[in-house]
Length: 201
Image 1 (tube, rainbow, N blue to C red):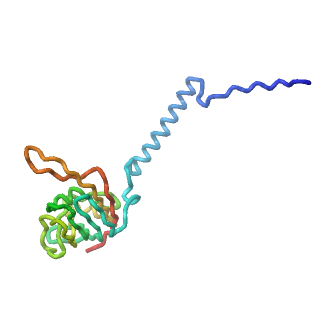
Image 2 (image 1 turned 135 degrees about the horizontal axis):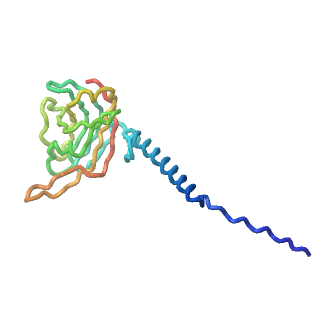
Image 3 (image 1 turned 90 degrees about the vertical axis):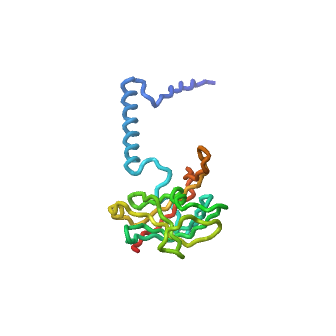
């Protein structure tokens, strides 16, 4: 019987070049591709958790901050007596046992114009039962039909804006200093974001 010798297996080749100059060229090329990719991501909005539209919820979705529940219903640009405002019609209820000062609602929420992402700050709160008067606080367990109104400091921000994104964060309680009362601040946890068409009031 004749035994045929098996051919020796060819040694496997590493994909990484042995030549140091070739290695340098490969590493440089890979770094350049990564830099271009990172630049592209940055130009398209950066490495952020969620695009304004990707994780947004429809109007009339209830959001619970842990202190109050809010249901955004609609949004409009309104020429008020002294300024242009973006007004968001909401149903809102204080679920806490203490009154909530109205600035706390602005602290735990954010309103951004879309497209563009310009943020408006420090809304006022008006109940529909007293539409001409700013509310001071939100009483416990009293559901309210209300308007949150943001003053538009720069009218140019409205150019091209067709929607607003209302984002609500979980409220977090932090101890006061020097014997002062505890403070409620905006937590890192996002409860949700509701995207609303922006109409003319």
